[in-house]
Length: 460
Length: 105
Image (tube, rainbow over the protein chains, first blue to last red):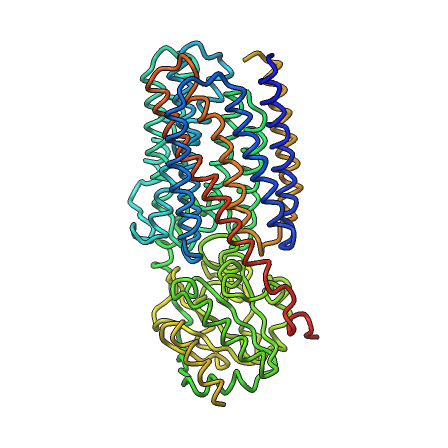
């Protein structure tokens, strides 16, 4: 080994250590940012190490790629609004996975049938995971952005078709492992993986996106780890595995928060089944409340808990809710925010939005922490959340979301629900919370309503 | 690849998985979005594989072009991912102690 190769390996080791340290520092908001600087340093070192340690002759492609990527990435980093974070993250899963897949294809183009059996196996994983994550993430991003209909796309025999595509992809992979000289096997594996990614994500509704995002995160990471196996590069294995496991842990957490299994999310077709379900308990009436009455209730309360949902993000109402919260705090009201793990479209979505609006993170409470506090709460304000506060999940064993842990807002003394219209929530489920005597409804755009509430509170 | 290298790689993989599980399960739900964004940026390390493909000596032109696309997308992830993660974490840093929080009960 030459001196430059040793230098390169040293930078990889340093990068690996810094990445792990950075994730460890992620465990607290005070240290997280410093940790990311370390990770950035590690990344920079590894890039320099690679450029020094590899026998590079053609600089033009490298410089062009780095420049173009930096411009697009930098532009995204500065301009993407916090409300678009789920789409942005889905897109970045697609980019990461595409890079892994392309490196795999490149490796095949360069070495072809010289690749050893073990390497071909790893290469197959890399290319399949990379390709299916690319198209799957693009579909997810499209759904989140609203370019593609968010509703689950389903047809008869879908699972059979998916199974067929999946099996053909795996047979191509096996064939490629045995007969690497047949180029068609490799490319049919690649093509089928692209199709398979689309088929995996189109049947999934937007409400299940937190799980899908986490899973795609995991696949993208594992694709990078497989790249590490192919290139025999440990820093790639380590970074990819960390990413893969982070995604995996998040998927498990999200599934737990919905009381569903991963297979159920992927193949269950949630939104479609519900249309057939009976809506037996829609007997009651929804009671509307006027803005002034709602403002009065809030202004004279001791404890108020805000419960944000995806509706807060679509209405971009995070600043409006913070302003209302601050006005209430000035009046001596204790204000807290209750965050359900699957509120929004990706893990932690609501926390980021509220942090953007300057809500201190010490006011944000997780479900287990806040649930015991609802009985002593005067007013719970539900803003664009539905399923995560549906008492049916707890009380009605026949409900489709039975067993899903919820924020128990119905135990509060009174509940005000901010809702766009009288329609049902995203899942199409009836929500008995809206018919309870303690609940009153406030219709309209969340941002405008919260603004009006804030004005009304000032005049109380 | 000879079996010894494979075994070493599997060791690295298993240990990284174990360590990742230990470290990441300590990240609070509060930071799950930045976590996803950060791990994404970190796995943009596949950039180093792309760099080799894009510029190594004696590689065919097609490989260079694939490498170029991979370098571009990986760089988008690294630059964009770290940039956005930092923007998010900055927001969590400010206004640490709110006067009214934690006083209740």
